[in-house]
Image (cartoon, rainbow, N blue to C red; front, side, top):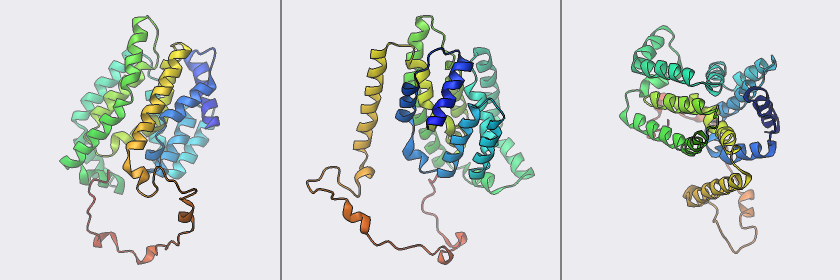
Length: 286
């Protein structure tokens, strides 16, 4: 994370025109908005996303090393890198309009394009997508997930609006707007928008918040951090799953230690049934 923050600070200084970088505040924003629990559900692509961002914030040829390492975890790394690198560096409203028109028009022909690609280059990943592409339930679920992710950007847009009222230049705003348009345009594809935008959604939300909040005074920055810290903590306390095994409060000291010594059985994968023998009961995996 420290390496990641250093690379980000270097990018901000060289590309965005920063003169004074508050690295600790930048790191705090990263940690505050990083979606750790979601990263643990898609581990391989999450690790690849980390190296994708290292490549994005590296100007030298070392970025190809990061791309190669990321590809060891997920083969989509080169493609996602090209996409993320383009999205993050959109800082012009003319580019925003141009790319948005292309994405919206392309979304109307997306299904036909995928069918053509599937015909020419059949592969298991694309086949998995094509299997569920006509499922209304999965599409509705994907739209809800996209909407939840976009809610994180509402405060950014709100703060950006007030900055624009004061004639401040918000270079990251076109990037945020394009990301929102893109995710809405791809929301008909189960599993695609979140995975395609994972490096930004899971890691970079704090980067966008930092780029906006730093334009306000220190007192406001502290209030914003306290507010979101309280909000995310409250959400954790309300989630029953976090306390399904261990009580949130107990009068017994070290009440959780006994669970460290539980006997656990191991799964013999060779004895598991074949995929054809399994009756699916969780079709909402995506």
